[in-house]
Length: 479
RNA sequence: GGCUCCUUCGUCUAGUGGUUUAGGACGUCUGGUUCUCAUCCAGAAAAUCGCGGGUUCGAAUCCCGCAGGAGUCACCA
Image (cartoon, rainbow, N blue to C red; front, side):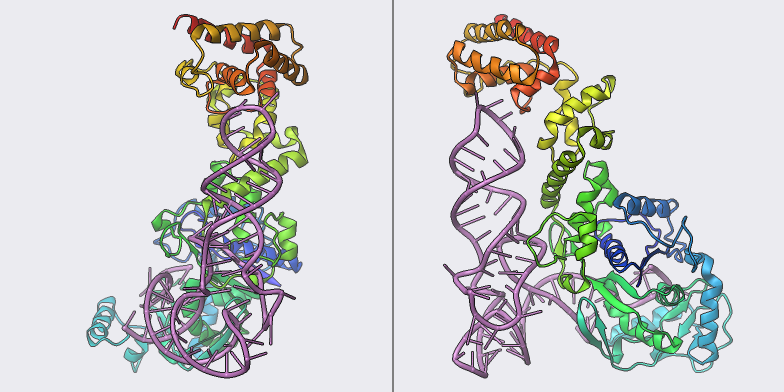
């Protein structure tokens, strides 16, 4: 088994097309076959500098390592189509020799005229209806067209099942453009054959071209590989396929927002595929083990960012709990608030240990942890309008905080002793947990939420914690 | 417009003629876990299986129509 991912380097990989990399990878892994990365760079006009690197970066991030392709090489290289020109010409000449391809002398203007004619007559435009009777010899500078042999075609698609189309969709497609480079339609067939690709996995937009491909395989004397058509991924609104034009994000945008590679692979693989069980969370190995083409969904699936974020939370907790804080910690690099940079990694690890189970993405660290690294701005409104605290006067609040300071001053600074101390304060102040703990939590963080109080105190440290109590006491006293 | 494909809770899906009063997950809502937020736990609402015919003792499941949606009709992939 040999599969491939064959992107054109026109930009980043977005979530709408990354499944055509994931599924071939999973299949090749499962069958102990090979997964090829081939760069389809024949469109020089749309070529984007650096796009190949962007594509490889995305694949590496997801862990979709290719067995053959750029960087790693392989027995069927080169893996850039622009470097395979001679191969395409070899096959093209074979078709010419057999009278199955011919030079197209039609100028673009004339072509346009033909199209308009058909449009006005309300009949579909087919080049073969305008096929010139005598054609000159083919040479570079002239496009080469396939001499089609239209007839009804039936084929089997591993996902879509049995498909068919009539002769009216088959035409004299261009094999080689006037710049001497092949079109996708021709190049991919030659390449897949030369490279021994057994399974062609690609998006649904190619389905209507398959009859033309079938004709080409036939003319070239090539065996048709297993055809696998993936349904589209739909955008968040409407029913249109997700595309860059409509603002589809790149896969790596999600990485930069703190989504884990494990999540992305899991989510995307399960968008439009399931193994029939009720499992939601799959490791890479589980995906490789359970993946199967015949359980790929036939209809399009909408990309649901909310579910992606839920899954990311699941993965975050799972990985941290499996690996431990220290091993996972390096992956949080780059997601901390700027104020954290002056602190030691050990301290950041302590913060991470008490906050990680509240994160949806790593990026949440930026907004959820700032009070661990700098004193919060005091905003007494948070206290005076708090539903548990507004009934108390400033004097009472000061008194509660002072009692807390006195108690905590003599408390051993670890989470268990701190919890004991907090419980004792509850009794000595005769306050309800909601009252005392709200007050302390706000005084410490002035944040909309924070981890358990004893843990927050423990990590913040005695000096910082008591200083923050005192700041709030002062502020309340002066209010 | 031609051709092709698709159609189960808001979303992702299970379901291949009877075990289905259509199951799960996300989201939503309600409770619970000494404050908050998140997690976790318990529970609820949520699909007349696109519509209409047919086959059958019986259909989400098979057949035929229809409608809606999508894709494609490039010297782009």
